[in-house]
Image (tube, rainbow, N blue to C red):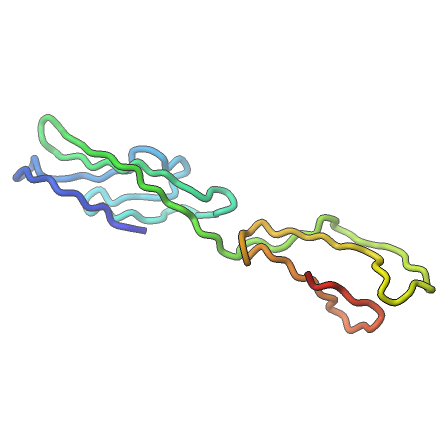
Length: 138
């Protein structure tokens, strides 16, 4: 994800730095290399489950007394098209009179998609070849 950088002007052991995630990673989705400050994704990101993380990143020195500095890192999870559309009714069956006029609306389907933006748009189509029925694709 990123690399955290810090500087300690002390020399020797007092200037050695250790990085840690000290709060905000409630589901262990991220890890930080304590020596380099590299932050990595170690769990599963799912924007529909959680779209923001606020990690408290702390750097400690090894001096006596030990000193530290903390900052909050905001991470925003971007959406990918990982959810299939879902119809509001599992099974649909209906009857149509044989004298129904062409162009008459006979049923209204409704489907939703939990993704965001363009990924959440749902299109409809009839998959069998028919001239008897037509569908509004949106």
